[in-house]
Length: 234
Image (cartoon, rainbow, N blue to C red):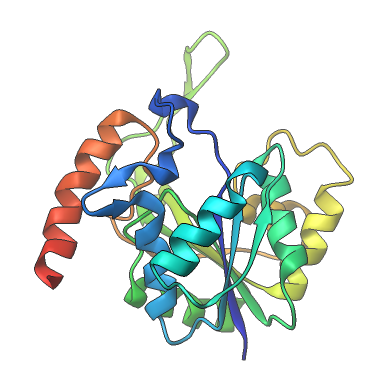
C-alpha cells in the first residue's frame, strides 16, 4: 500500500505580517516547515512526500529541505496555485501509483508519527477522514452584521486540523468535479469530498498541540511547544 503525503507550503501568510512566508519562519532550531516534513520522513507508513510551494520557492525548498535536511522521501517539489485548492490539486496530479493520500498544512509543525498512523488506520476503514479535536469554546453562528443567529451544541462541534487522509481515487475525482464549479467557499479537503465525492468524512482525534502557525501569537505558542516537544529529543 502506497501512502503519499502532500505537504502544502505555498501560502503567503498575510496574517503573519512578515516579509518571510510563515512556513519558512524560524521556529526553535529549524524553519516551521521542517518539523512536519521530518514527521512524514520518519513515519514508516509514508512512502513518499510531495511538497507544494510557490514557483519562486521551488529551488529553495529543494536545497533546504531535500538536500540540507535530507528529507529524501520527497518525490516531487511542485508549484502550487493561486488558492489552496489549486495547490492541493497540483499535488494530487503529481502522485504516482498512490493508494492513500495525506494532505497536510506545512504551517502545522507539530504533527506526530502517532497521529499519522492513527489517521491512516482511520482512512483504511472509512476512505475519508480528517484530524480534529472537540472545540473547547462555545461557537456562535452569526449574521452578516455579527448578530448571533444560533448556538450549535458544543458537544458536536470539532475544530478540524490536518492531515486529512483519503483514498486517492476518491479525493482526486472529487477535486476534478469541484474545480468545474465555484470553489470560492472551499476551505479544506474534507469539504471537497463531502460536496463532490458523494462520500462521508470521519474525524479522528488529532491534538490540541497540532496548531497552525497563522499569526504572530501562534508563533509565540509554537516556540513553547517546540521547546517542550523537541527539546526533550535532544
